[in-house]
Length: 77
Image: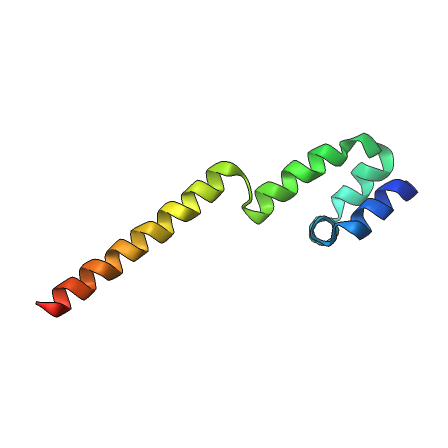
C-alpha cells in the first residue's frame, strides 16, 4: 500500500477501523490509491454519517421524544 495512504489512515482512525472491518479495501487501495474518495464514501455509509441517515436518526429520536411526552401526559391524567 502507498505510504501516503498509510499515513492518511493513521491520521483518520475511523477510516482505518473501517478498513480493518472490510479487508478487501487493503487490496483496492494497494492496486488503485485513487479509490480513497470511494473509501471515504463507503465509510460514511457504514458509520451512518450520510445526510439521509442523519435525518432518519433525528426523525427517530424526535418520534421517541414525542412518544415519551404522550406517555407522560397520559400518566398525568
